[in-house]
Each structure stands twice: as C-alpha cells, then as structure tokens.
Image 1 (cartoon, rainbow, N blue to C red):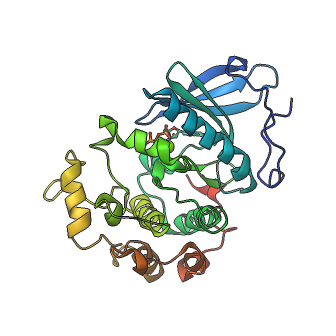
Image 2: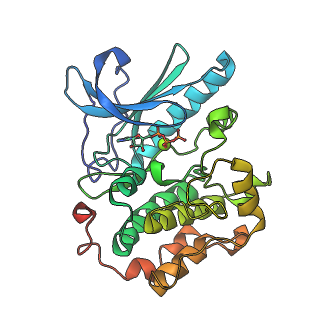
Length: 302
Ligand code: ATP
Ligand code: MG
C-alpha cells in the first residue's frame, strides 16, 4: 500500500497515490463539517490506519457532466501534489449521485472554524497565514495557471504543525458551475469579486479580492460587508451583490489595525481588478515582513 499521510516537506515530490484505494476500505470516524454541497467526514483506512478527510458532494447531474468532473479532479489531484500549501487530494470516486473526494486531513479545521471559536485572529498570526496562503495562490496562478475561484475562510485549512493550506480549488470549472446552479448557493455570503458578480470576465486577480475579504473577516471576526442598519447576517444575496458592485469597497479600520495591515487589505480589496496587487507583489508587502514566523508560530494560535 502506498498510502501514507506524511509531512509536507517529504511529499514535495510524492509518489502518485495508490490506485487501489477503494471507498469500501475507509471507515467513518466522525463528521468534521458541512458545506453547501455535502459533508466532510474524518475516515480511517481499515488496513493502514491512515486518516483522511472524506468529502462527499451530492450531485444530481447527467453522466457526461459527471465524467467530465471526475476526469478534471483526477488530472489535478496528481499534479497539485507538488505544492505544500495546497491540501492534497488523494482520490476521487463517483457512486450513486455522490462525488467523494479523499483529502489530506487538516487537524485544526478551517479558518471559519477558528473564528467561530476565537472570534478574531490577531494581526501577527494573520501575517503568517497570509504568507502561506499567498505562496499556495502564487503556485496556482503562476505555475499552474489556475484561478481558484472559491477563496473563503472555510477553504483555508490549518493543522497542529502550523501549516495553512488551500482547499477546494476551482480546478473543475464544470463542478463550480454545476454547484452555482443549486439554490442553496443563494443566500450565503459571497467572497466573489465585483467583476464576477457582475457577470464580466475575470482572472487571477479575482482570487486576490476574495483573499482580502477573507483576511479582513478573520481580523474583524465578522463578514466585512454588513446589511445597512442591522448586525445579523445577510438574508438577501442580491442586496449584498448590489453593495459589492456599486458601493466603495470595505477597508480595515485604521484605529484598530496597523498601517501595514490596512495597506495590505487595500492592496487586495480594490474594485478595479487591475488595481489589485499580484501574489508575487503581495508576498513582498511590508505587512508580511512585520512579524516573525517563529515568534507567531501558528501552533500558538489559540
Ligand atoms: P462549500 O460547500 O461552499 O465548499 P464549505 O467550504 O464550508 O462550503 P466544505 O468544503 O464541505 O464546505 O467544508 C466544511 C468544513 O469541513 C470546513 O469548514 C472544515 O471544518 C471541514 N473540512 C473540510 N475539509 C477538511 C479537511 N481536509 N480536513 C479537516 N477538516 C476539513
Ligand atoms: Mg470548502
């Protein structure tokens, strides 16, 4: 059996995953989380005892579309294994209307889970997190030429070792468009850039908008766009969309955060795509230089 969960350093050039892995060999341990499309379970391989996160996506789609999605997932699960800042995808299956994806288990969950527990993530840790996420995004954009399309707190995962990795990359354009058509999609927060919401063409810089919004949400402890006059969440997706497209963009409050942090957020959350910095330029931003990774190691984030 070639299936092992090993550290990211040693898997930089990992072997392809074991082609023999079968769903029947995985036993459920517990539910890790739920998304719009299905649930994620912690599973154990019956013979090797290796643990994984198993994501199931309910899809009522036709045979042709389904085959396309699984094909795209298979291509990408092999090639994306080279980056330590991206959650490894070991396998994908299709059975009875459900696409199952075997993922690397990230034992501290997502940034969405962290902000649910701690409310806010302090600025120095956000610098360390942003640095790792940007390295992953830079790999997707510059090396793989992939737009992620779904950067948000629940898709940035963290483990006890202090590693942050990007999950659920929009490698499958078909999957994304089939997901977007489900009615559950409407009514959730949107991290989509104004150009995407407006139905225009979009590119890598669309991910930069989503990253800025995600990091600002982690800093504030709430989604930065708020319905006028009320504190609770959005119940009208179209009002939120209107606000993102037509109003000035949200920004970090300068009385609560350092000038470097505010400048970093402003470099991401720009309405004109061309005004946003690229991953390479953001990696050189003073905000990322301000705090040392040793001092603010993510294993200390509580
Ligand atoms: P969407 O359905 O739009 O993608 P989502 O990102 O919230 O929304 P999921 O991707 O299913 O939905 O993830 C839900 C939760 O499951 C995450 O917030 C996280 O707690 C947990 N989770 C997902 N993947 C993993 C993983 N690889 N390791 C550990 N926990 C995970
Ligand atoms: Mg997700």
